[in-house]
Length: 460
Ligand SMILES: [Zn+2]
Ligand SMILES: [Zn+2]
Image (cartoon, rainbow, N blue to C red; front, side):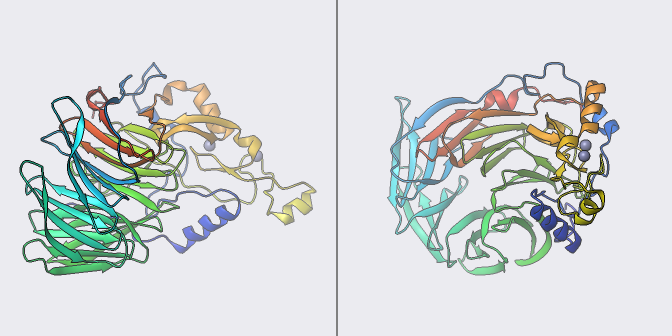
């Protein structure tokens, strides 16, 4: 069994620091319980592989290829699932429909099942082994359907009134015969799939927004930006830890069962990779979206992560490279480079007869610095910065003097879909990804080239 050593919660000191920084105009995602890099360590960066071509990513010029578009939905699509054996897509929409689209001989997708629920379905879970479909509804009910072998019909087999609010996550652990559901009503409930009985539950402080299961572990994201890690023993929940670093609601979770790595996406634009299996409490930021991250899919075999946001950017991350943790932001009342006081340091401003300056933080060393000491913008993919961030003059100098120590090769491939993504699902064995957009169009992508492209490091 994997050992999880994350510390629980966020210390009062760190919380104060966060609030202070917030008041001073910047907020940092503080990864609690983690050993921060106290200073920028070039020797650490030096081990990162060198690649000459800085335009292409570590995965070369590979791109997702659009294979099919499925139009015809009249309302928002809340969830999509790709079948692994037959070419088919489940959708759940605000028009109350649950549909199964199958690819016909003419290469077009047509609805094979079109079923209306009493109220809007919010999420789906499909078990290909058992042909069972779970549908979570906005009113807190969960329905189970048996899907016919020919995919032409689905029959309601059970219904649970589990929750008092919209269902935000569903899961089915076949081996332990448990069906999990979580809801905006803050609760997580599990039922026995054999006798339908409720066998356990857990209540969070915030609305549950996402869930992934790899028993005995259950990971639940919430509206407050936390991820609660539960261990289920004899149907009883045990709180293992609370991962607190996001500064806004968790929107999506995905689990890489090979590496025992959890990814959380958030409305704070950030993705955090939590190295649960590593046992050292390490976490890494993936910073490439300029809007709310809406959905994530891990590709464990290919060592990739797919993420999408509200503006329609789809990113494929190379997770087969060595990454560096981001430093914790330092606090100071004066610029740590030129010693000029910040604007709240009234005493120093008065004594030295100077005007206080705005505080910034160098993203690579964490120093608290003024604008003119921090006037350099760069990407730094090993720390997850795929878009340009502010770094201090010292760090920029080190990068200029020893460009060989700072590999700026992109470690992710951005792709513009031009419509906000509401849901996404990957069938890694097929190399197919499905997305649903705010334009109510379902798109199926061939991602084989992205998944099979040579990875950045490959050497470990
Ligand atoms: Zn300064
Ligand atoms: Zn710096």
